[in-house]
Image (cartoon, rainbow, N blue to C red; front, side):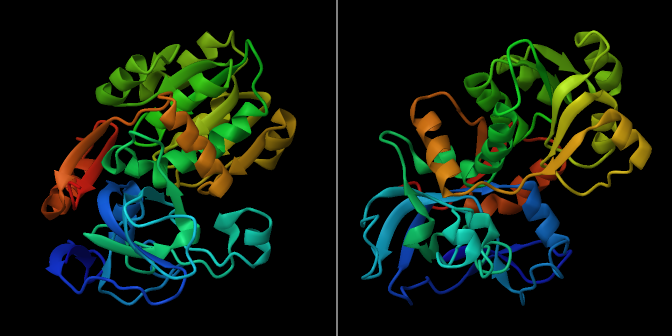
Length: 343
């Protein structure tokens, strides 16, 4: 089968011909990949950001946002059947550790992360487990929803935290209207009564925010003044940061109101705030991982109801390098998706 492989960090991945995965354990499932989302994390993986955190010996196959059709199942698998359209949780988890027993799959102490420390979904086939799979709603195509396996699921988990806070008349500021941010805006509109201030430096991101119904759309250079103006000088009740670098943490602290909450999703930058300012402003700061299986099920219910739709650009598997380059240079509106198999 064809697969997009990393042979060394800071080297361009290549499309290789490798052996198709087979069933090895009784809970294994082979998925025929119909769509694999192209994520900024994939760029960080190629650059070696995860080399020490989640070590793996190259070569390995990229891709952690995967959807497709069940090709084969182990004898212990009962939740999916051959032919089912499925989306794959980005982690393969054990089911018996503290995190799994508490329903927080992303805390699994022995999880593997396909596309990061084991072979992922930039390929024609993926081996995963029945535990990682969710059957797609009727009439939902794998290629149309693959990025929800990480981008959507991560956005959903963060928005679910915001839902517990936001009341009518309050404001949430969204930093970044890219692959995650455009999902986050739709989730906020579907799940909260809050006014949405969307902030993105690119005209493409600003246009997308308007299309999705953000109440106020601002460029990066007007983020602080514009948010304060929109909130009568108080600041946003919640700031949801899908960027986490290039100065957004500092902007977030400036625009969150006293007693507000800063939810960090994107990563790569640093948060530098004097402890006195943190105390006097009494801001809550919370990080956000990918969501759990329950989050996944709830998100896909919203997708099935048509309340959350991905804006995607599709590429054949052989064009993975172009898709990664387009993402890296801001040419993707929404999310890029590789198509290893049309059906």
